[in-house]
Length: 470
Image (tube, rainbow, N blue to C red):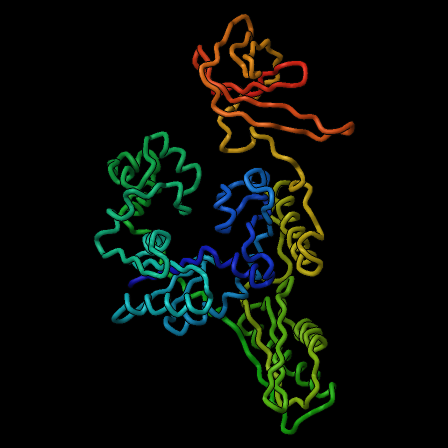
C-alpha cells in the first residue's frame, strides 16, 4: 500500500510567528528542555546557526538570536486543520510529530492525489512542504526530506535499496545510538555499506537485530501506518425543546451529558483526557471551549466539574438552543499510576524539568518572551565550547615573543624550544568587562615552524599562549 510522508520542517516556526508577528524577519530558533535547537529560521541559518547546536553555541554565532521553547502541544493543536484534510482523503492517518505525518493512500492516481494535497496545504499554511511517496514509512520519510519544495518524490517499488544507499545512518532515528556506534567500528556509515555486509556477519554481531538492519537497508521496515487520527472520541448532544435563557437549565444539560459520558466510558473501560464544550445559540452562533486534563477522568462528578469550569469561561448573551459535549483522547489507564521500581533520580529530574518548562511557556505567553530568562542563556560561551573552534587544547602560558615594527609576532620561545611564525592566518580584538573597567587584548591565529597552529594573545605588558591544535 503506497505511503505518503508529508514533511513540514518550518511549521513550528510558522506557528510562533503567527502568534507573535514581530518575529517575522528576525533570527529565531526553537529549543527543547535540554537547550538544544530543534528548529532554526532561515535568518539564523544565514548567521551560521544549525539544528542540533546548543543555545550557548548558537548565541556565539548570532548574538541577536531569539530562542523560544518548542511547544509541541500548541503546534499539534494548530495542525488539526491540516490533519483533517488528510483524514478526508484517507482513513489511515498517523501524525508522528508536528513536522511529520504519514498517510496511507489507496486506489488509483496516488501520485496525483499526493501532489494535490501538497498544493492544497501549501496555499493554506504558507510554509514549505515536502512529500515523499514509497511502499514503506522509512523510505517515504527519507524521500520527503530530500524532495524539492512543493513536489512529490516517488521511490518506485524495487528501487528502495538504491535510493537508501547514500543515506548516512546518523539520519535514521530507528537505529539507536549504541547500534550505530558498533556499525561505525565495523566501517559502516551508510545503508549502502550496511547492505554489502554478509547476512551471517550481521547476525553474528547483532543477533536478531542484524536481520532487521538488513531488511531496513532494503527499504523494508515492517512498520505499518497506524490510524491515529482522528483520535477516538465520544459525543453527547442535548437539544432544548425551547430556547433557554437561565444558567440552571444549561447546567442541568451538562450534568445529563456527564452522566451519559461516564456510563459509556465505564462500559468501554476507558478514560478521557480532554473535554470540549460547544454551546449553540439562537442565531446559530457556536461558542466553544476545550481543556486538556492534567489527569484522566471517567466519573460523572469529575466530568461535570470540568464542564462547569468550561461554561464559566464562555460569555452567553443570547438564548441557548443546544449543548454538545465531546470527550477525546480516550484510552485505558487511570489517573493514578504506580511508580516504576527502578525509577532513578535522573528520571525524576527529567519529569520536574518538563513540568517547569510548561510553566515557563505559560508565563512567556502571558507576559512576553523576556518575562522569564533562563540562567543558562546568560552564560557567555567560550570558544572551546563551539563546534567550529579547531584549537581544542586551551592553554594560558606566558611566552617570550619577538615582534616586528608593526608589533606582529615573528618568533616565540616556549618550553625550551624556539618557534618561527610562518603565517598569520587571522587576527582580532577581544575585550572583557571587569569591575574596574574594560580590558582589551589582541589575538593572533598563527602557523609555526615546527608545524602547528597556535593562538597568541597580546596583553598590555606580556604575551600568552591561548590555544593549541590537536
